[in-house]
Amino acid sequence: MAQRRNNTSQANTNGATVGYETRLWAAADALRGSMDAAEYKHVVLGLIFFKYISDAFEEKYEDLKAKQETEYTDPEDPDEYRAENIFWVPPEARWAHLKAQARQPAIGQRVDDAMAAIERDNPALKGVLPKDYARPALDKTRLGQLIDLISNIKVGDAEARAKDVLGRVYEYFLSQFASAEGKKGGEFYTPRCVVKLLVEMLETYCGRVYDPCCGSAGMFVQSMEFIRAHASGNGNPSTMLRTGSGKAKADISIYGQESNYTTWRLAKMNLAIRGIDGQIAHGDTFHDDCFPDLKADFILANPPFNMKSWGGERLREDKRWKYGVPSVGNANFAWVQHIIHHLAPTGVAGFVLANGSMSSNQSGEGETRKNIIEADLVDCMVALPDKLFYSTQIPACLWFLARDRKGGAGTRLYRDRRGQVLFIDARKLSRMVDRTHRELTDEDIQKIADTYHAWRGEKEAGEYRDVPSFCKSATLEEIRHHGYVLTPGRYVGAEAQEDDGEPFEEKMVRLVAQLREQQAEAARLDEEIAKNFKELGYD
Image 1 (cartoon, rainbow, N blue to C red):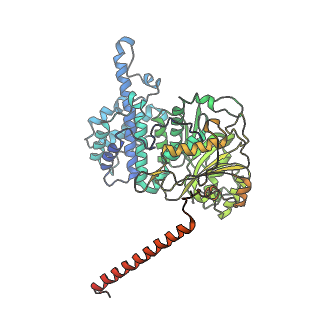
Image 2: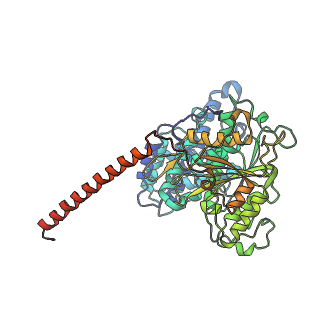
Image 3: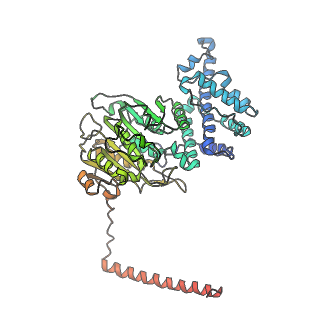
């Protein structure tokens, strides 16, 4: 299959690096002391966001001040800033004011007041910024040191915005906090490489993009990065994807929902620092669906794995359960059916689930999976390597669903793939980034995505072919034969072994001789061990 995407910038890593995140993290983490990472992340990320707003404001302020006499501009006019999507910072909330008082005992209250003032004058940030810096548990000396530390970096001026410095620093800190928090960290952070793989496979160029459990909004951020990366060199994105009506769409609309309030705030800040507009709602997706009528062109999600307490007993008659009532003790197929419910007629979805979702037969899950397969909604299944997630050691997979799989002009699928499912076993891909975590490299992501696009019939991706141990296009009949189990390893088979050319009889003589030598060596070592024990008095 031809490789059609060569504009990824970091060939060997999907980490967010601009040169000093590691040093900045190390310094900030040293100031944490005994504070729990889950609590400290809001202290640090809130201040970094505040610094971003201040940098952008100060740069514009100085520009307006320089033009004041010739163009009659007013540096204290909030509309001058709002016209350029720059947050207005009132005088009492400016960073220089905070820095001057960083070593004062009342610095916590000063920060809270500044956050409140920014929210007051910028409705888009209402209820988003953390305002608990004055609490007694937060060491004010350390807070002052943290302010001094952050004062030394530029994250919001024009140059920094062009390089997305804050976005990458912010993402790096999110990943580090996820690692520090362990299991809880996964509630707000999905590894960048997994998000990037989902986006590259779905190609979220335009239309309505929805994430029902959006965490810190990583799916949306990566969708926008994808559009920017592919806008040059691959043609105009607005002409590369067409809806069922045949009319080109030139932009995307973002819809997300998050049940955890503090994580919802992270999502709002994460989008704000990149200037991304989106409807991000706070609430329980199952019990308070904030977008009940939404039919999305793309759905990307990383739902909590094997969620036990989701209130399923109160939703037994819900209209979303078209393919089977989900288990009250496991929300996996509640998420799957919620996603299907919100798919547009030509919509596609890609989401992460625990491996058990591919084969479980407990509590009716096998029957639900069978019904979804028989409805011809399953497009592709990807088995992921282990150790990708900070939050869990549970093996994970990617599901890809599509409503319209007949192919042809006016759809995202160019080849008729009805009655077929593509299985990709990516467990052998990835690289270790530390002792406990892996990541998919850009080459890995491109290999998986190109395989999927070639299978879908996109000419620029080349011709699709089954590759033993990696990918297989299986028919519905084959899936029935396997009891509706969707584990890729069941279908892709084993990699063909090359014949080394050594005749069988000669090989057996050699291997038997090698075995005899090893047995003799084992016996010699046993005698040495017995002799040593005897000398020590343990005969």
